[in-house]
Image 1 (cartoon, helix red, strand yellow):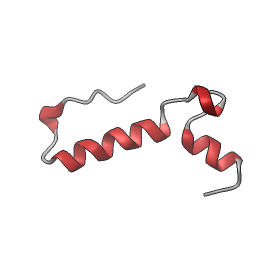
Image 2 (spheres, helix red, strand yellow):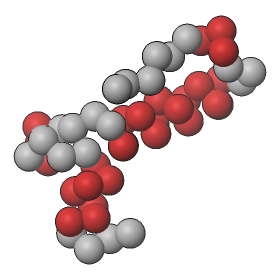
Image 3 (cartoon, helix red, strand yellow):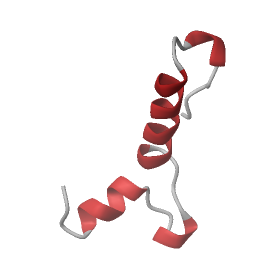
Length: 48
């Protein structure tokens, strides 16, 4: 389910970084957050 970060598919470094950040916040669960993604954790706390 993770994005395959093929660096040749990006026009700029910023696009590449943006995709990595999006992947980290939406798809990668964190042990420190009880195996929730950062977005799930923030939503559970009442933030949007």
